[in-house]
Amino acid sequence: DPYENGFYNYRYDERDNGYFKNQKPKSKSDLVEYDFDKSDSLKVPGDWNTQKEKLFLYEGTIWYKKDFDYNLTSGKRLFVYFGAANYKAIIYLNGTKLGEHEGGFTPFNFEITELAKEKANFLIVKVDNKRSREFVPTVNTDWWNYGGITRNVFLVEVPQTYIKDYFIQLDKNSNDEISGWIKLDGERLKQKVDIKIPELRKEISINTDENGLGKFTFSTQPILWSPENPKLYDVKISSERDSISDKIGFRRIETKDGKILLNGKPIFLRGISCHEEAPIRGGRANSKEDAETILKWVKELNGNFIRLAHYPHRENFIRVADEMGILVWSEIPVYWTILWDNKETFRNAENQLTEMITRDKNRASIILWSVANETPLSDERLNFLTKLTEQARKLDNTRLLTAALENHYINESTIVIDDPFGKYLDVVGLNEYLGWYDGLPDKIAKINYVTVYNKPIIVSEFGAGALQGLYGDKMERWTEEYQSYVYEEQIKLMKKMPNLGGMSPWILMDFRSPRRPLPGIQDFYNRKGLISDKGIKKKAFYILQEFYKGFF
Image: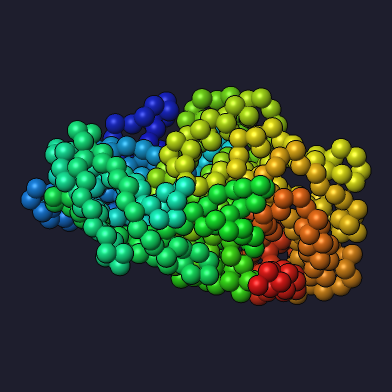
């Protein structure tokens, strides 16, 4: 629906009888210009671009319809939950608008208790992935704008008063105290809630207040979660009529004297960056198998860390990282040149940050929340990002805050890290492309970095493009030898980087990007991957693997 006929009339006013009404002709003279039942079908979860060739480059609106019956248990409430839809979604049930959501990578839900029927329900979702200057991300990105309902959709039945949210983590100042809170929603907000961790032989009861909130702290001695031993505990939370089970790891993350400490001990983050691109088949990754494939490659690299670019990835990926012991940097798409002085843009970014942290705050693998990537300096930008860090700390003070910051030359051989936003972060992220966008590989040895911050630095990006299977001289662009040469020289540079706490070179796999058109080489792929889009490792993979092996 590129002209949004199903939503606007010819005067561009919102229609009363749009596609969301799911109308059928009642007689042969009725005029209805759409028919869901005769239209194409799409798999959910999934992007539309890789399901239909005619939609590969499509940016615009597509309408989804799902029919269902539902026999609601007496006394229960019913919600419809979306893992994500890119970018803007408006949701209707049986012709009634439930609400809308903006942002393509975070979850949302609506209560449908009063609207759902036993038979013949129709859920209609209008998804629009058009880009706009005021959106987050903005019009200008370096990844494919996969549209559609890209993550799972569930019907969730809960009691009248249910456990809406919870936060259970190791206290940030202690290895043997667990603290957190439980939040109820419904009619009976004041009640007893039990928290059980059977393996630790812990069972406590708390009472929630008139707002449904109950806080707790208790002493115990868990085996601490780490990449070497990703220990997860079964945790059960029970209220009068509801119960939730989760697998949670307990660990501490902090910084001290320019180092990152995990459970009180220094750790070097041996990482790689990754987009949410499905291995080998392409398109938006969404399955647990996709996550396992990607994280096994990280393990094969001798890595312990992954930077998820440049937006929150799906929940099952984070849970697999919990199980496999891979540390995670999770980011919102405040990317490049967004509208810093636009209030709606800030509200949108803050909401995406809130939804990311709300979803993943109990996941041990996530140690870093990132609020931005490669954003140009300005007073408006500093104000915008500073307010985001305040919100992040309010929501979760147990993790580290970071962003990929700007840097600049102070002479021909010295680069300084002095982005003023670094003052508000725990860990300074640095993207640099010496040997690719900035000179040739032989320049790298001449460069030194200095920093004004006594904080850990993660070199969040460096790299070079290479077409897998293209071989030649080490100074010939796009060859595997050139990419390998860049990695060899960059590794030497890393060894003299001040306060280096880790690195996540760009990038694990080649990924689709409309900014990369070079025929026969890029073909609309960013070729900086250590692994090709077909799953074949390039020479540079083994160079990084060998470097990381030296940390054992």
